[in-house]
Length: 423
Image (cartoon, rainbow, N blue to C red; front, side, top):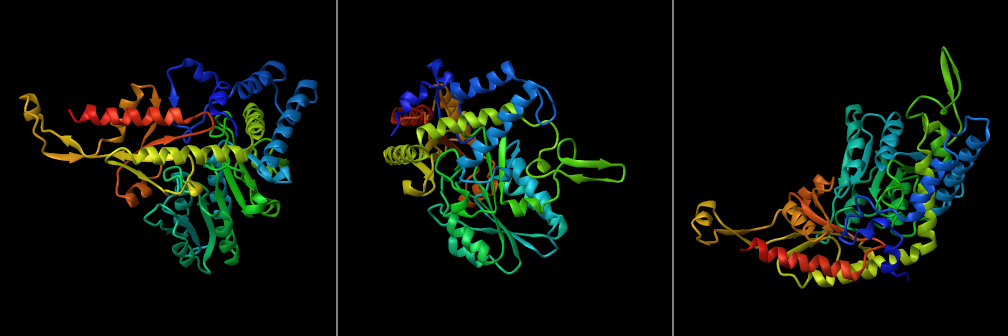
């Protein structure tokens, strides 16, 4: 297994020395190799792709298409034409909502879950104006997907099942191969939001047998503004374009147009060339570490985090207690802090009226004073917050450059927060 302390040395941002970064579920830091790959493109062969009949354009095109092949192989696909470059997971799912939605009829059903990120919820909700029905599978008391509830909500009207592979709040890792089989038995398409899984564990689209899968580069050491939509070739070939413009066409006439082959049909306009090249470098970095080892490190670290969490009184955290099905996300609230009314406080009377939870924003601000970066809020999962009975949570998310020392620093700071806010 790799050493996270050594890994952290590959990331220039940690040379600051005052940063404990625990927000990788929002966006990851970037290693020097990724930064260099983007810089090298701009320095050596910056030009447009697929269009110029001159040397640096051909070099840029070769780098861009080799990046596609590399990323395709990383997720277990043997056909790079099924790997479409988009901006992020959000754009990928919107692309599917728009193109698949045009084929749906009133009364058709889409099945999601209450743990979905807004990006895998709102695009489908937009189809309600077409008469499409959205249904939601529930979670159990441990924060796991209720599979019986999910299966009971799949019917002959279900056309799409779209679920997260790993929750960005609960850390729950869903049994997606089983869910894929269940969806296909009902003749429904299975779409996988893999934004929180592809960066953290081995993911093989053939083994899962998903019809489509979406993920973002910036969460897996790559640049912002680049993401991937994977799709089975026969299904992608049957979809209309999402955007019109240059490079997505074969021929344009005054009375219409014909479309380019895959994957270019869905890549209108000048693409994020440097983003694709940077994401390919990120894939190389992760492959060199070994995705099995990345996942092992995460399980080991989360076992330690959950053990430390039990030592702090009144700390409530959400999601499965089993590290085998829990990703590197630790969402929590800190409660039982005495509350004081302003009048008594001004008079110097420390008379507790009640107890309450510290607002996650207060916790985040306090931790920031110790150089610890965590997320606070609803994490783009407001229906899940409602299901949990909270308005928001604090969230620490761990990755390859985090160690037990980072976890210790977090829990020491949380103990200090309890003392500071209880005064």
